[in-house]
Length: 411
Image (cartoon, rainbow, N blue to C red):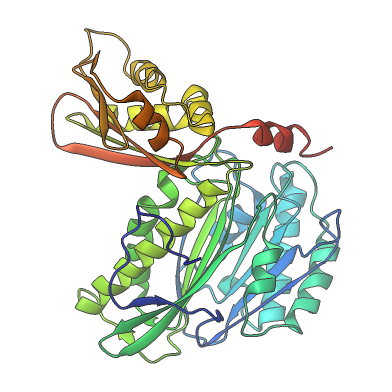
């Protein structure tokens, strides 16, 4: 199956998937088992960009409860010059106090040695159970092991960052620019504790294009707002979310600011991150379907409130899981998001079929609608009074498996 599998992602011309995979020039990666996961699986990844002038950009969770690796990376790493990324699964190192900060700093120092870089050029990331102290000794030994296994493939690195993920999320793409071809590769994890404003997710993107730091930061910021900021599995905000873009420049192909190449590269990065975000939603811990809600109206705040209320509604999500065309649950969520002041006028369409107009039901083919909402992707459209504002949120359904996974997560 092609990586770009969703109708909601626009793939620019000149962007092609590389079937054999692999990392762009200048990058090496590894994944090892250091003993953090009870099942003995891969749980520690190392990503290294060898060129000393590597450029980067990063974004983090907006949670008020930040995990130790997020704090250490934000406070001690040069976010525009990250050469090395160390990421573990099996332990979030969150809500672990000063000891957790010490262990994250130890992880950063060990990763610097493993990647032959300064600590200020190292980002550390963790994902897993909150409130359990990270065993830094295991991580240090694991990073030493990983340093000896660094190579041009990212499969083991991807496996090492996965937790409840049902499938891996990685890809390698080739993009034609005016100066020649460049590669982009990406790896992500995430399936639960996902909410707009980031998710329980780690995502890493590498390219051998040469970017200026301001360009990398601008493009990553814009593309994150259209991807990871637009997804919800369960409306829960994580403590550890991190997205990092690294540009090694090893291809020798420069992307000049405000150039056609910058536009092409931005479009490619946008498509890449949107598809990764949709894969996270698709992997929503037992999910069957992915929904997209588009809300239009005159009040930007109201539009956003309604979109999030629909995407996070257990009633809407269970209806999506069951393929139930119960549009009344959409109406309920709209009303919850916009408290009563006067009777609200709204329109609802599902998969292109209008079901309400001005707040009242309209005749529609219920059998046809039931077939439409049983598809893998279902789109909802809501019109509110006024014009000029529009937003979207991608969300998963909610079924029995989600409860099973989260009820037994630590036991």
